[in-house]
Image 1 (cartoon, each protein chain N blue to C red):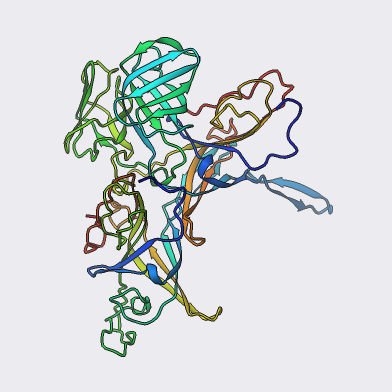
Image 2 (image 1 turned 90 degrees about the vertical axis):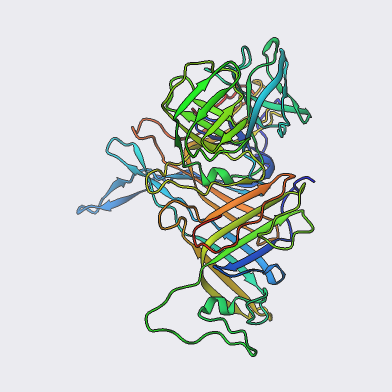
Amino acid sequence: MAFPDAWNETALIGIQKLGGSEVQFAAITDTIDIGEGDYPGEGVPTLAGGRIWKQSPKEDGEITLELFPIELDTTTGVGLFQQFTGGTYDTSEPLASDVAFTATDRLRDQFRIVILWSNDGTASTASGATAASTDSIRYSAMGCRLISHKASYTDGILKVTATFKYPAFNKAGTVKMDRWDSGDDTALAALSTYDDADNWS
Amino acid sequence: MAGTFPEAWMETALVTIQKKGQSAQQFAAITETIDIGEGDWPGESVPSCAGGRIWKQSPKEEGEVTLELYPINLNYMAGGVISSINGDGTDITLSTAAAHGLAIGDTVRISNSTNYGTTASPVNYTVATVTDSTTVTMKSSTSAAEETNGTWVGYKGNTGLFQQFTGNLKPTAISTVDGDADSVDIASTGHGLQVGDVFEVAGTTNYNGPYVVATRTDADNIKSTDEGHDDAAETVGTITKISDGSQPLATDTDLLASVDRSRGRYMVSILWTGDNAIYSAMDATTDTDKTALRFYAKDCRIISHKSAFTDQVLKVTVTFKYPAFDKAGTTKNDAWESTDDSDTSSLPALTYT
């Protein structure tokens, strides 16, 4: 096969909680915005009239999805209500987001977000392997915290804008927390299960 | 385009990006919009007690160039061994040992040959036609005998800037580098390279430059089928991966902890012209009977790379930022150029080394 002129219309979106299973969200997603962290800098004027480039630390990245959620189930891609609230996921109907808190613990869940564009018609998960002799591009970010979850009924349809934010690097400064992959007439390997907060393998 | 400049520059432009010390890449085919934000040179008037105003000038600010792209994949660089290279004074025909993957407008850097680019002085060419998967032609006035030695490195255009934004940040130390007539063997603990990857050797006496991994002996040893470094073994220097060249491709995720965050520097060139015979914004216009307008900025860092699927097409907005002047304050980092068809000379070619 050959790469298309551009990646249009469809994509697969997989969201996996650290230690959990990947859930597919393409069916309720309208738009995707991938904001890799800027790597800024500025020229500092010197008295010679020259400029010394002062590099700043790479900033956090953000991924924003516009979703049409349906309900609170966390085992299928129908919404991110409980994922944003955190705590223990309710699995007993009727479902409710967790309202309990321990006094001091504000530990947030971490997620891996994977987005796949591919001409592999058999691909069904964003992080799975693609078929041989197909063309694909994939973006992945781990260590994502769900920092924003805004619901609106402004257009007469329930839409949620969810934003995930992730640090550029791990704590040790040895691993980049996001990556791109592409395969030219070549299969993409499946991503490893997200069971280590800062390890791609 | 004899006569005059057009009423306005419209619809098309050449967009060329070159990393410092490497070769040019073309991006016009995936670029939708270009925004050139030359740095402001601000100031303000300070009211004096006489009611007058004293102009207080501030330092010129950084410039930015922003492109909206429709990227396809991560392909950045590839290379290998030359099977045959032959120039007839008009075209050079290059045949590669393995499939080249090149397209019209891509830059090919030839080294380690006798007449088409040497180890000390590699020569860049632009692909004019793609004959088949292992053969391309390139415009050149070089006329020389056919050769069957040498190395080519292709700089892919119109794919994306994914690897360029991520950068290559993890050099490994060379234990030994030793070349003979047709290969270079490198021992470097934990090199992290795979067959097809393009890497750069630095800090040696005779081996500096780009190479392609031909054989990955093991995690600590690689071989490049390079025919121009029949030199004595050395035990200094580093190797740094420039581009993932082994499909499937991936951006680099490894970092050295807290010590090296050096960034790549780029020249961004934008050319509007009526000259249909050139493929690169860094090229010279082909004769004096052509009009052209060119902007270029050097020492640019890629500071932002934002992807959106909002309109159901993958679009990336990339921003390059550059200081107004060099460190010494003696050179401006951006410039405009134009040529009228009544000029006596063409726009010159640009270089960035």
